[in-house]
Structures are given as structure tokens and as C-alpha cells.
Length: 189
Image (cartoon, rainbow, N blue to C red):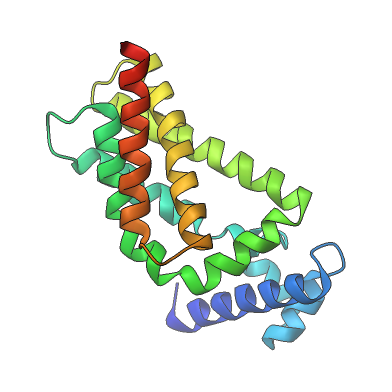
């Protein structure tokens, strides 16, 4: 993608977010988003298949970064340690994107159709993480359980950080990881 196409994509995402916050998701059209961004509706649809995807565009990059980090994680880490190593690796990108992510989260939380879409994207991401763990030799069921549990903790840490950025995303991830491991230890006892 050229720099100009990246700029158009970012403008479309910003316009979509602004309009969803001003008017609501259901009352905003792709044509209005395009007009706000200064492009044609056809240009909008060259970048996004529908208006929802203007908010979910980063999911593919996040999936690629996390699965690559899982593959590159140090040998000998258990499944949860591997996941949290990967989650920490994307922290800088998430922190850089906070000015978009915070209002995006608010729009999604207020819109059932978007909340449903977010849940589907997170389930697909958990499946990709499980596959990446399996590629490292983690048994199928253990990989799936680790990915789903780890994703729940990752989402919790991220949402908590969006609501309270003071401690930093890294600290929120560390707390979630410690608490998850403590919970699993209680279960073992």
C-alpha cells in the first residue's frame, strides 16, 4: 500500500470514528464517512468491505504480530508464558494507537452489532493463537485452552488500561498474568 493509500485509510478510519461518536453507528453511512474524509464512496469501499471494518482494520496486523511473536518466543516457555511474551511484544503498537483505541472501544461497547463483531474477531484471534501454540508443539486441547484463557486476560488488561492508562499497559498485562497464574495454582491445589 502506498503512503497516500495509508493516509486515505487513516482519514477514513478517523472520519468513521468521529461520525459514529457524533451520530451513532446505525445512523452513519459509508457515503457520509467518505464525504467527511474527503474521498468518494467508491474509495471507501476500495479500503473497507463495510463500515464496521473501519473500526476493525488492525485485527489482521495484530494477529500477524502475535503469531510471529509466538513463533519467535524463547524455547522452553510454557503456553501461557509464551502468550504473555507475545502480548508484551505488541504493547508499543497498542500504546501508540491509544488515541484511536479508547474512543473505538467506547463506540463498540455502546453498539450491540459492533460488540458482536468484536467478539467474533477475538474468537478468531484466539483460534490463530492456538494454532501458533500448536505449531510450537503444544498439545491441541492445551493450546486452545491457553489461547482462550490468555485472550480473556489480554482483553481484560487492555480494556482496564483504556479505562485507566496511569499504570501503563505493561503493568496491566503483568497484573492479569500474575492473577491468571495464581488462579491456576489455586485450581491445582
